[in-house]
Length: 369
Image (cartoon, rainbow, N blue to C red):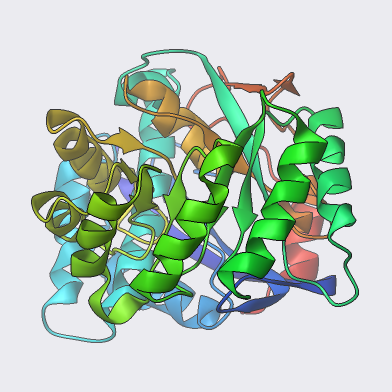
């Protein structure tokens, strides 16, 4: 079996209203669909990422720069394909875009490998369990929202099967954000997983103050608590000051970047994103390093991929989801066979590869390249 053709499709879906974290606003939902064809008729069917700035450019890199390097290779040999694709990172371009392009190809290769072997990616990656807890991302900053609305949002999340929420903070003062999180905890009750994500919005002193305020609220993790300029040293210092576990890693592009976090003692949890960082092959390398030093794993977004990866390893915690169709119309409308979600758990898809069936009418409607 050999790779015969590579196709990448950039997707952009306008959202009916913007969603904001501490340091960004989301007006559209974007992704890249990658199809790799083999000479014996297999075709991958996957999508990666939520990059609002460079989808067409990443798709171009996949088709023009990476495809010539991997044509004729056997997709079952994922390490060989990955190393051939990684050659593009030395001589050219923005490495962030390049690693996202490699991720698109690598994810498609794992999908093909599973289809060729008749096995789910979860089992290929380790197959530790076949379901995993699921949490939502919520608590967004939106004009006109009352503090009370965050408690109501948590109740809605429970009603649609979520077992927890990664709640947005860092865009206001620690005291103001505490009030929002307190409302969320009151609405959710004591058994709901509640993490806080500052999106690198605070100084170390502001992050310390916030952690002190919310400590009685049983916060499961504090994500990207400090500004990016000196985040590794600042998170290592913050870990000494507070009791809430620190979570970071989604801004890293490689397993080497994750190792930097581990070596510095900066994190308790890593949420490395395979769609940012080279795909499942590189994600597994990072996961292995984390497991060797007792650090747990989450995954930034990408429910359809993360459910396979996090459930494959013993130190995976929860997968993440955007259950609100206004926030993620791709999850709601473009996947025709979403996994079963109930009572805070998501089942791992059992079909070969990632077991994703896309609505190709929707793909064609929203493609931008």
